Length: 161
Ligand code: THU
Image (cartoon, rainbow, N blue to C red; front, side, top):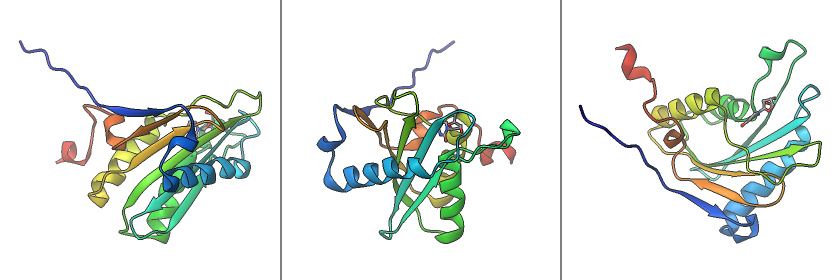
């Protein structure tokens, strides 16, 4: 028997203003995007903006539905748009921000399990890592070098062959 360990490093900033200017501007854009969320059921507004390797940006927000499971997260709205608008252009960095109508929006939002699976496949499909910048509307920021790190021992296309 062997015991294995999975570790990864991530980066913590006390405030978005301490990020590199390009990253801060992407985060600010994701924060603004929260206003375009459609989240009448959870009141949890999520905005995501990605910078592609060609310099373009694509955004997404969560889109809920009265039939709750029909709702889709901001990250997957973004990935679907990027795949159509910029087919074959990898995403370099994705900033994700959340706004809680109860005023608790200083904690970084972290992608749900389903989004982690989608992000991983997007990375594999584009053969390019996606950096993640996670934050609330204010406060600390987490930067992750590669989205797939959030889903160790993952299931992927290779398992189907
Ligand atoms: N949500 C996202 O859009 N992204 C995340 O990373 C976490 C959760 C959405 C789904 C749902 O509309 C609401 O937030 C509450 O779960």
